[in-house]
Image (tube, rainbow, N blue to C red; front, side, top):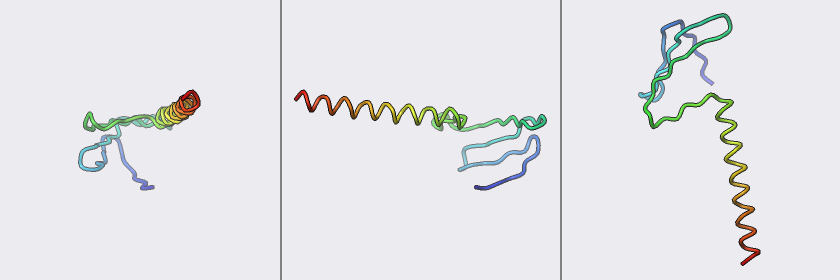
Length: 73
């Protein structure tokens, strides 16, 4: 993991087309602004983890459906 120090209004660039800027710092909270192409999905980590878990459950459900289809011939 790369750890960087940034102050308010300072930014970092990722892969030439994603810019993350420190918008505001209040106590232990930091507000970030993210500029990226529309083709780049951006999620909070907890939301991303929920999406991944839902996708795994859906994939397992599809495997169950295929197994049932095979049994029914």
